[in-house]
Image 1 (cartoon, rainbow, N blue to C red):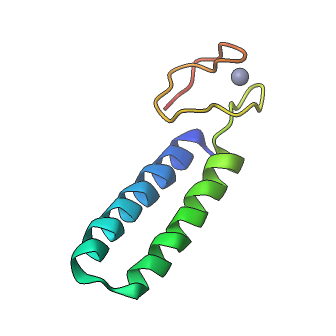
Image 2: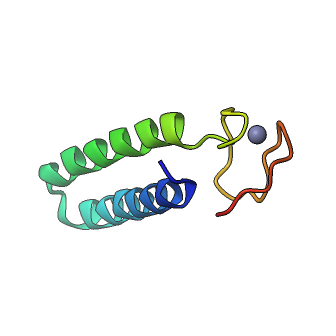
Length: 77
Ligand SMILES: [Zn+2]
């Protein structure tokens, strides 16, 4: 998977989780909790599997990153 797509998915799911949290705290809708958990599962899976350096395949850690901390490879994100 392209690192740009990975970052897009992570950002989109994160915003959805935050939005569900905010809306959920106002409406007390239980369905939103399940939606939030579903998106959190997607976020966690994509973060753990997809958020890796394309060169050395090691995990990149935080989302705001310009180069790989392991091999110094400049990331196109
Ligand atoms: Zn690397």
